[in-house]
Amino acid sequence: MAKKSDKELDAGLLKQFDSLKQKHPDALLLFREGDFYRLYKEDAVKAALILGIATADKLTSSIEKKIKTAEFPTVALDTYLPKLIRAGERVAICDRLEVVEKVRKNEEPTLSNNTDMAKKSKEKKEKAVQEEPAKTVKNAAGEKPAKEKKVEAQAEAKSEQKAEVKQERKPREPQMVTAAGEKVTHGHAYQSKANPEEWYFTAKMDGKQLKPQRMDAADLAAYQKKEMTVPQLMERYYPTKLMPKVSEESFKMPKSIAGPEGNISVEKFNVYKEKDEQRADYGKYKFYAQIGDSKMSAVASRQDLNAYFDRVMTPAQLVEKNFGERLHLKSAYEKYQLPEGIDER
Image (cartoon, rainbow, N blue to C red; front, side):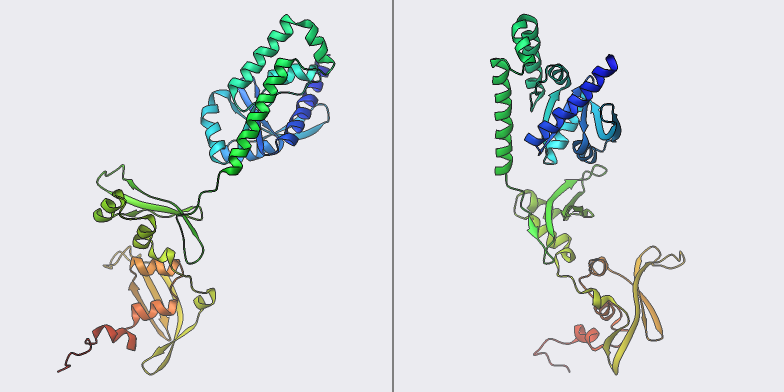
């Protein structure tokens, strides 16, 4: 008989889960079972991804079918519930004891959005069973006490109000959008724990955290006084992230650039880290280029490295900038020209 009762409870619980999901498809249902909160089916999979917890396969004894479950201790509710809310999820908490009692009476459980509501509903139910046996008999026939109907109506109304508030809440707008259409969010400055005198600026682009950049003291002061905005700090510390990207085709080799006596062919171009400990530039990142039969390298500046990896400058442009003098390119000598109006004597 005990096994049969367990089968009925399993079937009843899943039936109630499916019923509640139809009414509240956008809510995660947490069923309290002893010292744990448990989720079922698609709720279990979604919560496991957000919370970083494992899922398990539960074999339902009534229908001999496996379903996904996930659980965590009730003492961890204060830790996990905020994570679910911050992830944009609605959460409804159901007391398993109420489910068990109501499955035996073919009743529908009360949906609750907080633990206090669940406890009050449970106390009212137990009191009704102990003090009013006549009403309990009516419950078995499918009727609910007026007080319990009122509690359920309040819970449903509160759930609907929260759903309306969520619909009205507008998604957070990005602080800026780059020329390539990438969204910049969460730009902020923070103090180093290792060295409190150092401050760093960082931001997220399309959800990806950028490498923190040490801030200049003047920039930090201006930012703290709200005289410098996040877009201005992005231009200061991540300029290449904001520039338009060049085409993939422009990165294919070989490339032809204009030389002093005709076109020059760039056969190869890449970046490497110097591993020869005997060299003065050991450990630094360098550009390597093969121009015709000649091979050459040069230490790359941070700006040029970022321009290469962020693909806002082509290899041909970087060759011209870093190897222009060695190749005797006309553009390399423009910086040596005298300003207009000055006698060349």
